[in-house]
Image (cartoon, rainbow, N blue to C red; front, side, top):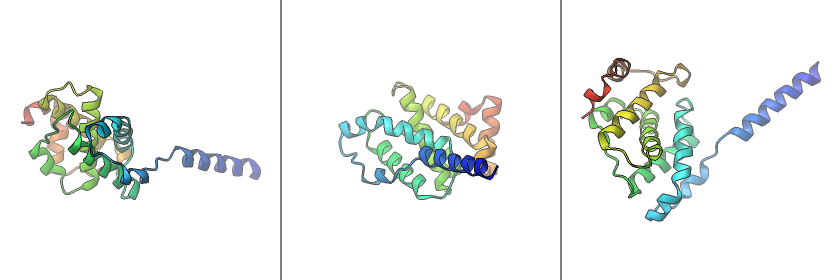
Length: 163
């Protein structure tokens, strides 16, 4: 019995280790040209999915992913990413939440192959972000300002809030 239990624990640890994302190498990523940014799109998609499918944690891996994502958003020439300033004010004091918003922006633009109007991008990205925040396992503390966006999403009036 002890042998079986030990085997189960060892297997779980191995699966967790193999499945863990390691984004240390992203701190050395070169995104200086349009070609670099285009080649990085698959990694941007991966990083965005990672951030939007994991709870907010204060760890270096999340920071590496966030830094890479922000640099790509800033340097890609395929799309001009404008943020909704009112929405950003709601979350800007929380780096880990802001990174989830940026991940939602990147994911939405990539999923649409960059063929999306700026307002539609904002509505869809904020909707994705609100879904992330509303998932209990992500352990997001929703402040009163963010709650307004959550309520608007639930009432299907989010587009009216976004300029």
